[in-house]
Length: 142
Image 1 (tube, one colour):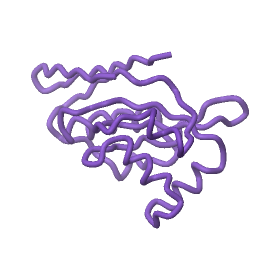
Image 2: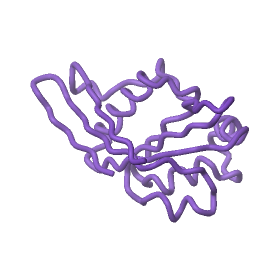
Image 3: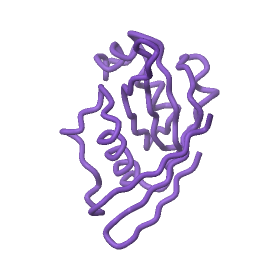
Image 4: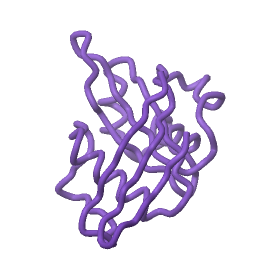
C-alpha cells in the first residue's frame, strides 16, 4: 500500500493504495496492520450495506498503535467513538502515508468530505492550506 503525490501549480494529485478489507479483532490487528504512519478507514454493516464510520489519521504512533489506542477499552480517550464502533462488527482498511503529516491531513480532509463518515466532523477539520485543489484517486486491494 503506497501513496504517490503530484503537485501541479496550486493543485495536488494524490494516489492512494488501500489494503484489503479486514474484520477488526483486537488480537489479530497487530499481525495485519503495519507500524507505519497512514490512515485507517473504518466501516460497519447496516442491513447488509457498508456504512462509513471513521477515518483515523495515525502519524507519530503509526497505524497499528493508532487503532489499538482507539479501540482499547481501558483508554479513557475517545470513549464515545469506541462505543459507537463497538455496536457492530467493524471492518477496516489502511493506507501507508509516510511522506508528511500535511499529506495525511490533505488526504483525510478529502476522504471526510467525500465519504462523510459518521464519526468524523468535517466542519471542525481543515486541509493543510498548501494547495487550492486536492484530488485523490484510490486503488482498493480485493
